[in-house]
Length: 591
View 1: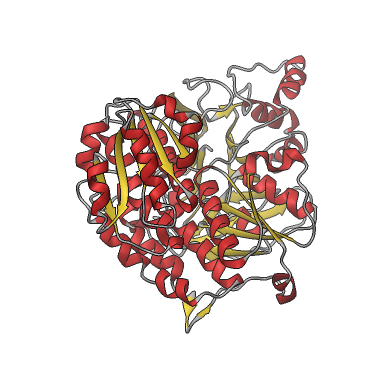
View 2: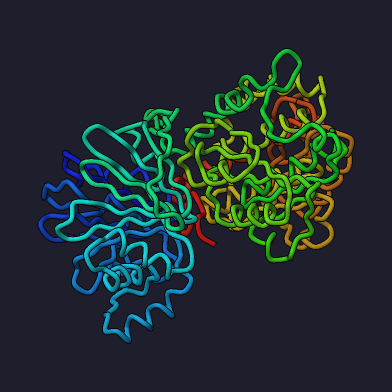
């Protein structure tokens, strides 16, 4: 989940590396470092954030950089990347995990290599040193044949004006410009320089010098040609535009991001999406499996409710991190849907590979064009939500739910939903105009625990609301089905326990009111999400956040917005780093 960047060209590489790492810091912010070729390899690295980094005052045209999210070894100056070989002639940055590093380290130590860090990455630098004879690219290839695990890797060597890049399981995007080349784990780091890119695929080996590049593959050494693609979003889209945090900006972008997910897909009473699955398979589809992690898993649960209700197709939802370890029963008549904002989530990608191995048809819901999951799936629906920089997902989540609604309509047409879902961007804009959520946050931001309750399609919304609060404010919060409260969680209720209850009007509204009365009888403080015009609930709770009344399938989108804002304002009042919460990174590309 670390961020890496490299540059070779006519410009001074140091400002390019530093600015790129600023844009990559959402991928990791434990430590930062760069290595440049200035006659010799010069490395500068330290624990902490990029704002504290001491930028060297030298001019070089070749360099690599790294911002870290720790896996092996605590955050420290020594464990920070880049890492070098014994003679400091080779320097590398790495995103991923080397699973067999301990055995490789022992072999290398027996050969006389000296290690100084606790990281798994350092073993790569020493292996390259061990294999180097005359060709850096060949030494990297021999090294990668020995390592087990995942890597997005950049390598430089003293007296060689080139960068070797390699990818397996961790994303790399190669940027092309007339006077230089860029390589990074994310396009956001290079978009200010170029929109012309090549997305590397697993086992790619890329050798870059000032005159050009050679692309080969670890399993197929011949030179490969790859189509140059154009990034379809702008630098302006990843700027804060006057908002205090990226997360708040992205919450307020949801009318536009949802509209972009819908755009062109509901037209003339038809669903216009391209699914590379034959009509006979879709007609006879008997089971759908959805797998995802974190926020995407909550979207999957909502998708299960919608597809089962409207299409009559059984849907199972699995944590991607557990899916392949239970020997899942999958057959060729099943459809596996994988959901990932980045399209690079390691657990979700592993689940996808497991399902493909067993013959299932696959469909991906991803936001990042050109991502691994987008390429690996037979079919897919791009979210088109735009870049999401805040670690806690907001607009990607509501776009995922929107895409699942579109998919349900593709599987079975429903004019009622088709007409109502078109109104969602305007409805969300109206919800965002509700300006008293911050006032509620001011009352409760010092509390240590929260409970979130919902029923039916709103149970996953309760889970998502609790996750948002946990992620960015570090307040302990749990989501439960409201009916389950009396089977255990009710023991926690007292006058110091805020309870957020999603209480829209529906067939079980009276049961929700009963749950509210049970909480009030134990002096719990209740914040209710309720439909506009529901004045009955006002006297039964402490605070009401009203949302427009919508059909059942759209309630998760509408209800999620105030829960995002509540979490945001509480975290901001607590002084938390909203965009970069501790211990978290945006794209989880390691297991």
